[in-house]
Length: 204
Image (cartoon, rainbow, N blue to C red; front, side, top):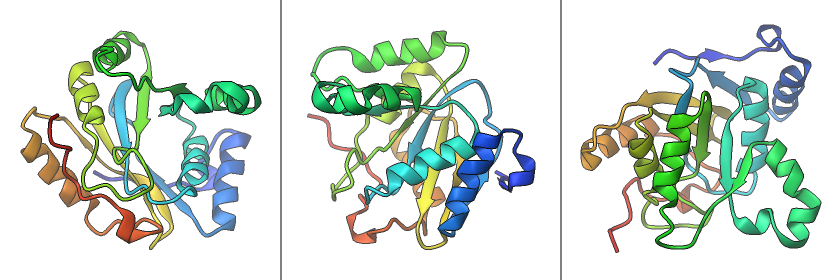
């Protein structure tokens, strides 16, 4: 996939230029190519630091594409929700359903299919701490919605944020994971030792 380096001169809106210049102050660059359609799922890997969130949000603002993301319910409820919930929603955030057997994945897949525009970003590791596997929700959501999977990264070694590839999942999990592993080879989080290996959690 061919992408391009975003520069302020290529961006039509002041908010995009501000976000890109803010990243540039800290030595970061953004690479992006047009999305392949109006609906899809984005995964971001590796996720090993709290800094990933502000860097990712600034990159999202620089790109200027509305992308939704799922956060813990605690971010949208209680005292945190009162202080920051509205801001998080304006930034594309939505509370994730953590209760088992709610049918959340199928409902989310249907919601994506029915929307005129809906791209959803997820961190498949689910946490910045080490896990021996990825959570499988991203895969099942993309399959349920029948949408492409965008492979995004935050690479601290090169200080770049971008999208490596767009993948049409086949349903052959190991085959799809091999392609994902190849795409992410060499990408480095802030704490490389905390990055999860690219394999799905065993079924319960």
